[in-house]
Image 1 (tube, rainbow, N blue to C red):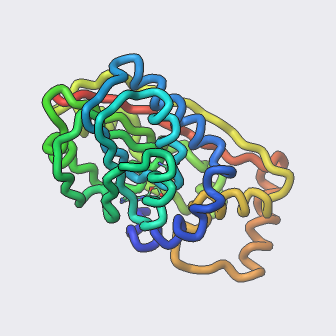
Image 2 (cartoon, helix red, strand yellow):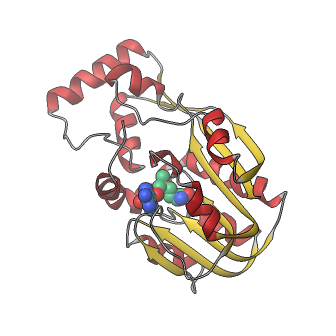
Length: 243
Ligand SMILES: C[S@@+](CC[C@H](N)C(=O)[O-])C[C@H]1O[C@@H](n2cnc3c(N)ncnc32)[C@H](O)[C@@H]1O
């Protein structure tokens, strides 16, 4: 299943103010992404952050990297305010990350927990936006992600495996670093789990709103199938350099 940007925008617009205090796993991913990228380089002229949201990754970047100019992008206008609170002179591009046309070439393009939404990753696009030896560093999720939800509802994004990502990028990029890990969250009740998904912008994979009965059935089935109310995150960290 793939989700159209309007639906993603709608979900994240509703959750953006609650996102940072609920996105524990995305926070770990942001730290790892920055720490691993910093092992290759810490000073950049131009940095572009894609899908900047409420600035979890931006804070890590501001603490770790030296840079001259910061560019950020998100589908949601409100993201600009969050990012400018952290890096005031950011140039912000509101819109689809796959379509923006920055005014300058970048030395680092970085993105946390957004690439999983792309059906097709246009590598040519990133290649064109980067200077020679520029780095593209992003985190995403592998097919194990939210396996409980998939098992119960059949709904899932078409997450790419590490091998698929490698095949997509290896023609134009040298792969510098790949990491895959599992982080499982546990909740007291299925309703608490649903609230967690809502507050991190991934509550619904369709436009349909659940009826009271659907929510109840989901909760009953969850408790029956998974006596421990777990939610599996399966993040990927992927860092590559323009050849
Ligand atoms: C899971 S949040 C991550 C936010 C931020 N990167 C962080 O580290 O906390 C994903 C963000 O990507 C944005 N997003 C999703 N698809 C996008 C697209 N095609 N273009 C630009 N932004 C997008 C959403 O609006 C949301 O703010």
